[in-house]
Image (cartoon, rainbow, N blue to C red; front, side, top):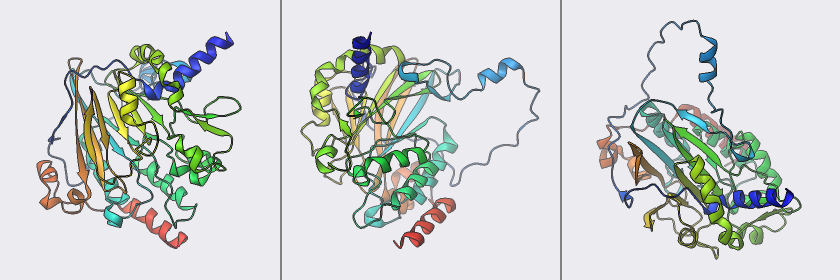
Length: 378
């Protein structure tokens, strides 16, 4: 039994190299979708009707987490539960932000205006999955304490998944554990493990359910962190390409629990195992978020049937993947919201198409950032 349990653990560790057998019916196209006429401010909620006396059975239905539980105690997070045949899921991604939290800082959108954008989007749909692919909490010349403010900001922004990146390990492993706690354990890294026990310090995978359509997300931290930060990663290791040959073993399991699989990675182009290597070796990844690249340019491309997206660095843009689900058929497309779109919405075709004429800075986020600037002397 111990041998079998270890094989199961290995299979789960390599989930980041695997995915459900792809259900994408066509090669993903780059499109400029119209999400509908978004308000220039989040629409106020209608006044609630008097609540009826709840029946006992209704209390069970109201649970935000599905009762079904998968390996390692993972339960799907139910984001929406409507009886509809056709809907869209918007996977919003950032990578390599490196504490560029202020508007205009080396081309950054800034957290305060990103908060407003997300408020607009949430006024339009609940079906949003917010992912950061890492290299987020460290910036040269900034004190360690800045990472705590970034963690508070990411929690305020509502990130569902954050992958600890190579540069984030400059803070030290123990500090990252503390930050994970601050963010209510949003960290996801499938290939990070304690060297003495093979246990994982972070969650191995997450499942998000949208109207019965399940999206599995796995995180992949660059093994280059071990070489770059030897003392800071003492006691923790990162599995690399040595297990790619075993990754296919996990596909059947993922097929049984999810309809769409996302790999959020900061492998980038500075390690001997690239996104293309992983995708070409392992079939079935629907979306690969390719963080950790040296280039600051955003990119959208396909490798086989896998959509690969990178939003570049310094929060100069935000990647959006529109997953269309219609009568159990799936198609994916992607686009970027750039700092130019946000800072000059009147000149942006994307903003004009969605009825957005202004993107004000969110007051709450502005206050948090002002406090950080003042207390840290930034």
